[in-house]
Image 1: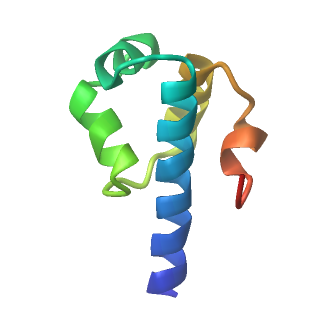
Image 2: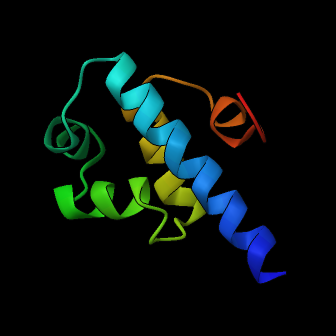
Length: 75
């Protein structure tokens, strides 16, 4: 199960970075839009944090996407 969890977090991390760079945002700018610390964005993009539902919702607002887009298994 641990490997599956790690794969899910890695997939999420890749998508966060993909959508952030697609918008041309730095980690700092995305953090400002989401009311997060920049280090939190860095941890998410390195699959070091498992975000809560509320954090995912804020992240989607900052990334200008729907939650379903972020949670799709693969792009």
